[in-house]
Length: 197
Image 1 (cartoon, helix red, strand yellow):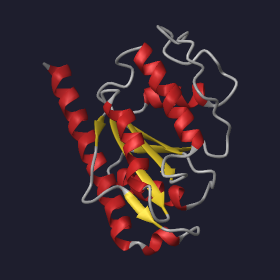
Image 2: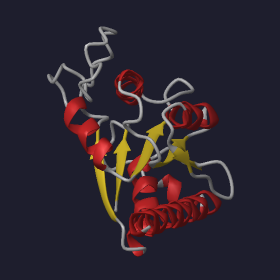
Image 3: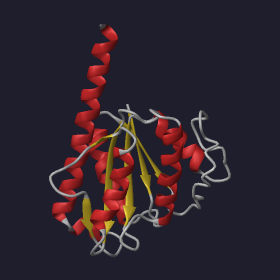
């Protein structure tokens, strides 16, 4: 099994990256492979609304990293999305990525069906809920099982490294990783049983 994490922050080693890695560390402890992709410092073009992706399984425009990253998303068993809060929502690149991915999946139903998803946000003050909601709405509309934790999936901090001072938030990230690994293992066991029947 594999979990693909996508970081929508323009800071490669910033607070969003820190909390994503904390979640991934817990997933790794359960023997599940992980990979972290950075999209924040790339330019992801928005969806052009052409719907040429129908029956293609990916966007037809490959002039940025979207197609490569979406192909990895299709192969992964779990998807972990992370974004800082920009103007009370996800970063522009995360929004463009989800917009294009959403249209590709809507045009090719079932592409991400029964994968496991979780969303996290690094937040300075406000906007964390709407940021997590934006990413969760993508999951819920694409037949992805959404994993939760003991509180909302946000960690507070402004400067790089500040999130490590939010002990409650960090513990929440650890628990989220454990819950994600638990569900992935449960689904894997169920799939094995079905294959043996």
